[in-house]
Length: 145
Image (cartoon, rainbow, N blue to C red; front, side, top):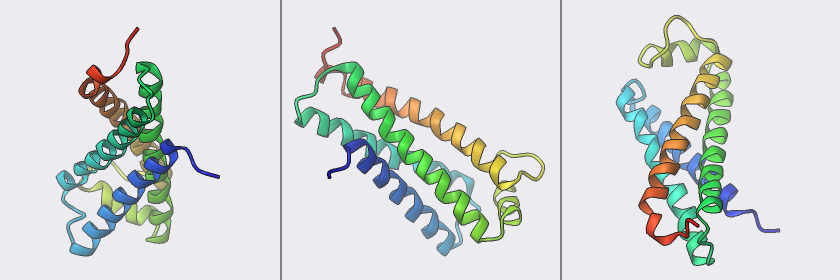
């Protein structure tokens, strides 16, 4: 059984973000918040790959391609947040999240679930933005009627 391209490319987003953050931890760069924002490029990659695959398969309907692109990015973000949840508990739970939140946008001492829920909302928002940007980029290839 072959997995849908949205799940496959979403998994590639997850792998890219996961390896990127593990590499940042290994190099001691995890405390640089601006490097964390570069994960959006992995989302761009996965969504672009899905849209290219749709075009190669002859799918030119604007709405179905937008849904496909959004599904790809949401799968990638959801898997990444779940991976962070597991990794956070493996590294010490709330104490680990407190070290992350010192250089991020959270005030106080967020718990692991609160941190992950906030990142999920942020990730879904970036998924919407990336999807809209990629739909504008690929706009001349799709039928809008």
